[in-house]
Image (cartoon, rainbow, N blue to C red; front, side, top):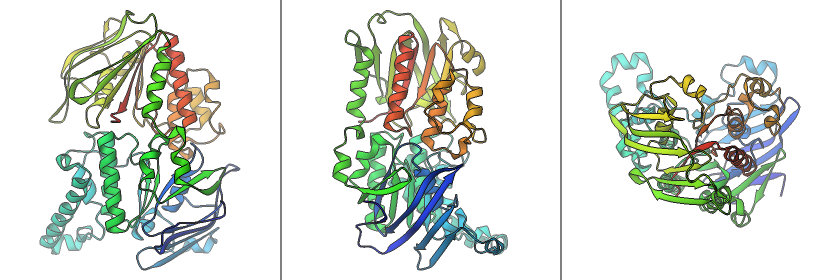
Length: 496
């Protein structure tokens, strides 16, 4: 089904798009897209990396203008109409600009794929500051009615606390956002969007990177928002999390070749590429080979370690060893005497809940975050007293969670920075395209392709934001490195 997309919900239309078209350098990403979005509707928006999902969200939230088309908003008892292309004299009107703040004021909220919180502020403050129409924003009111402003601030904090409690973050209200996990940051971002008064909420991979408990809490919270607050939600989600969203979704939209179409929920559910748990087990067995072994055992604080040992690597030399690591984030001890080792030619998969300290462990091994005590050895040489660049020179390679590429550089310029063979970039878009214009999954591909050749690879949640084809490419790359006797340590959230 193509053409105008209309939801099955009986609610009023809150957002309409007519003929939205957007091209980058001659490449048409959105081609004459039209749809109606209704109150109380929950849409799962799916598509391959680079299909235009993030571009569509950017346009609908005022962060990007289409080349042509119309957007109609009817959210807060007011009707707004934006039409493109705009005439030059329209830009002279200071009250008629298509901007993110104006769209947000109309009740449209956005949670970004790359989390955009204030890192040194607490989770509570990050949410409370989003409260609309705060008297304290007016300097005169702040001076003349200080008592009223303070009381209003307490009310905003109380409301923010309720949102965060509903997302299972009641014990992290006073934690600064540079000291919480990626999954916890995503929940803070959702609470902030709701606090800002969003009636239509666009969520870009809200549960990617969350552990099983976090996924349940977020999905239950979104269900409450829809049924109690009658919110309209559009969710873009990672391919392996699609089955988790389908129970909540009322509609499935698929973006492919610049066109939008409706798909049946049952058809999407039946696809074999929408579950990660069974695929992961099969992949680990494949990596081990028919004569290799896959052993899983419980690790500290509810984590699991799975060691994949192809034939001949059972007694291989240890290339990375962490002994008794103690690491603190502020006043909180994240790693308390942790020890693990990695052998040549083997892969170790670390599954742990959000907030366990997976990224902290990798940052400590790489020298990005200091350790309080313990020792780290790479190829039998102590490295915990070395800076990060020296550790890299000794044979360590690290892909950080959501590690950003250089947004202002083109893909061609990233190729020049890479020490790898140039053909590893062949599956990416036109080489002159700026990385800022790529999807989150495409940026992740670039960072994976740019990993230098090393003895040990630390891959912190490497599959985030990737479609099935890209995941298979990453898996192939991992298997090649293992055949070259490289050691690989991977983290993923605890799935269940």
